[in-house]
Amino acid sequence: MPSSTFYREFDEYRRELAAGYPRLAGRVIGPDGQGVAGIRVDALPQEEGTYGRLWTNDEGELGGTILDGSYHLSLLPADSPCHLGWHGSDTGFTTDPSQIQLLELRGSEVTELLIELPRPLSELCTRIEGVVVDTNGDPISGLWVTANAIREVYQQEGYSGQRTPETGSFSLDVRRGGTFEIRMVSRIARECTVSGHGGSGSRVRITVGDEDITGLLVTVVRQPPGDSRWVTCTAAE
Image 1 (cartoon, one colour):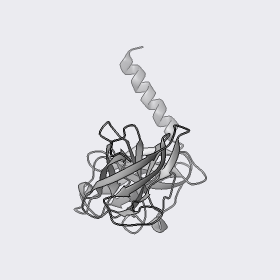
Image 2 (cartoon, one colour; image 1 turned 180 degrees about the vertical axis):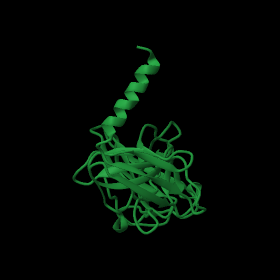
Image 3 (cartoon, one colour; image 1 turned 90 degrees about the vertical axis):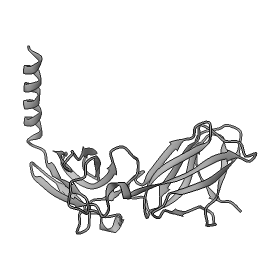
Image 4 (cartoon, one colour; image 1 turned 120 degrees about the vertical axis):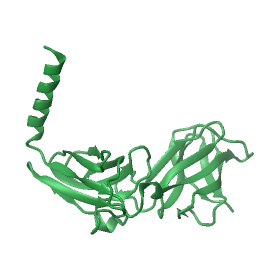
């Protein structure tokens, strides 16, 4: 069979298979009304359904089949772990968990969405940057350092992580306006403290504005290697 015939018949089969499932379609636009390319839209099942993922094209349009179920829609840039927000509110977009819209997708229905971002995509995310050292001031490589959003809604939404290189440095993409804790996964870290940012208490909470947060110093107190575990950093004295 010629390859062109195979692919044509396979596409026909896919269309027939998808015909019985709900279709999600719509458009993501910016504040100027223009379509926004490169947005990843995750369909997160709520008790019923199967995880799905769609991307916007160059015109900001998205479309695809999703299995029957109840879903929240989560938005991220296609090339970044920066969690932008969810589908909800009057504009179709929200960062407030109380305004997330629950979508019920059934049968062969087509659900049309319009999601309007409040700012250009380039202005929705910023960075938390710093370096990880031991108590002697030497950089530590190989640690998984994360910024975890307060009020997580679904698993690791609002989570950005990076493994430190030899320099111990990290640069984490996060949503502007969000509040984050600094955590790490390690076999050798007993505790970690953060300096270079205001705040105190049992856990460091960093609220990000329009500017990058830079110059954080994360100091790790070592322990003998053991099982990997999460460690939440506290404020340095």
